[in-house]
Image (cartoon, one colour):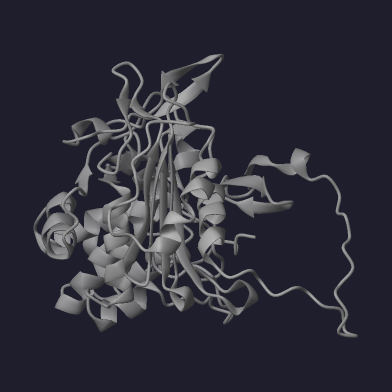
Length: 394
């Protein structure tokens, strides 16, 4: 099982891939058999110990034109972009232009005085208490810009460092701070300091997916028996999006594995945060770090209208997996879990205290518990899906 956290036009595995990968091709194809030559679909890539073991694509990038998805297809990676925002901040900390302990009003003085010091690290770790703009937008009249929504909030959901609550607003502010501290747009900074040096030649920060160049995958949503376009465009998503390919995302994972951004940035990205009371979190800075059964998974998912992404690494197994899909509803997280399980050793069987295999207990049907839920106090949205009999956050 996945350690928590169709038949389409499919690209072949790269020539020269290990023989073990060839043996998994049919199994990978089966996972994505829902995608056909007439539907949207997914691209999937995986590396193990530096070798490409999966490079496949299923379904269409553009339904109207009949353009197939391929290894070069560009997707809006949604919140998976947060690791690039966090890395940009940390690079500027390394440069001496920022400090993790800086009061954010030092860099964005137009923010209200909340009566508490909010640091850059609070924003990076989702412990600032600043309200998430995605919930606020549903309550606003008209179509206000995201930064305007953030600046209008005069109170916090909680005192900084007291609780954890996922806040896209914090990362909107961080992109603005990167731009102000570096003297260049966030798009230029990410390109010059991350994408170009690492060889991520297809990746870019753009206003929306339609402003990308190359093989763009449009986002779709199921509409009766057909499909309709479903994308976040312009400034209605907090300033823009990182677009990328499965291959580029694997390059990024390799860069983290090999410390190519330097010791400070690499370690801080994956250093899990703590609340004021000392409680350790599973969120680091733009990345989740989970250790189910003692096995570490470093990952982040992303959802943006019709796009769904999961990018993660299993360091002790040298495995890196990226799944990017261009339709709603779908869970790239669940699909990535199924792909990962093909290349990970099976988990050890659970045993009772006597040493005998534990009895199998059939649990209740939890299918009805899946859905989108909102925190009554903070308005934060949380999506739960069922995967292999368990509820998981996606």
